Image (cartoon, rainbow, N blue to C red):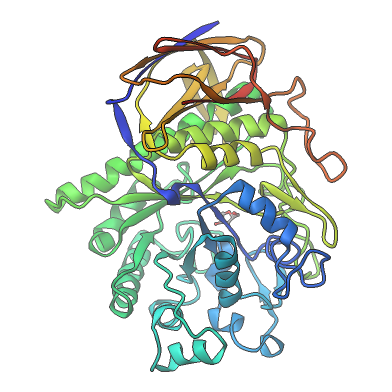
Length: 512
Ligand code: AHR
């Protein structure tokens, strides 16, 4: 099979924002405890931060980190997680049916972010709490001093303000599984009042309102419209979440499913802009895709969602990602890059152990899951100006199953291009990077890219992620079973690059 790309340096989608390459740390299973934080681990520093995990995080290169949830935040009292550790209460966490010890809280998270050079993104509880707790948290974190909450932070040992800029107004409030789930009207009102008060404390904040927990939520569309009719003037972002699945064990449709992320993004942009039009406003809301990943084996009623007996840091949501999952995941990376004009923040959910690119053994080793690789390549190589390539590719038809979907739970996708691609030009550094996913399970794809207005002399780097066994995984005993290998046979001539992509492969080609 053959596919062509025409790439023109002047046909741009938009510039990637650093926050596009974020991830997520929730108090969920072993993400915090036994993940980023494990006092007593042989690699832990004086603060209990695992240095083996930190080294992998640096390699993964996330830029912003969402915390502390997720579903967890909708029942979280932030005050429980600050002050002397021995005085912090243990609480039942109703999101994940576990016991939260509160040994790790906001200040520890900020320290961890500073140590890794990552921007913190905090979510406030708009489930069981509201505007008052949220504005107090902003005052605790960001006010220099001279007030009760800011002086409490200083008394706790953090003299300088944390200066957290990006805040989420609750989490998935449209979902009935959420503690104190709300209607769009209820949420729109509380989000508005909370946003006002948070910004009165610190006018430099950037706020994200909750959009839909999934494109397939029955309220999707109506939810965004009504919420934004309330809080449009008070927020900069609207959020969206997606977890791709292969419940149907239909790999071809699973690989197509990232295209529904494209639709989701474009639909949310339309709704946000329609609300702007109704108000005759030139303001353009940006999108925060603050949860995205592949997730299905440990989801819903399947194994590993909760463990009875209210354990501390249970082994839950420890999805082991396959080679096939990494391909679908790569498709999602491409969707995000191709909407760099409006998606100005995004968080891979999550970072360690719970649906994560990094796995650990408590007390033991840490390794990269298959999905680690496309993310690291996107974050390290995908920054710059995303170009709008014209793509010609053979197509296939897919039927994507989603249990939360429309009536028959299937989405007909009649014309899915075998080639899914994104092109990023970094003029400053002089690189053009092609991200190419061949979604054919049995055929190679010869790709020819014509480059217009780009004078690129040679190949900087070319890698593929590919394995004949789409069920192959990485593990503690075989941590590099799936890892990028060189992509050979690239031909470069004046204004043209040609490559052959193996069946079911993720490929990255960087020219200079
Ligand atoms: O990331 C896991 C969970 O998925 C989050 O807590 C929640 O927001 C979403 O439903």
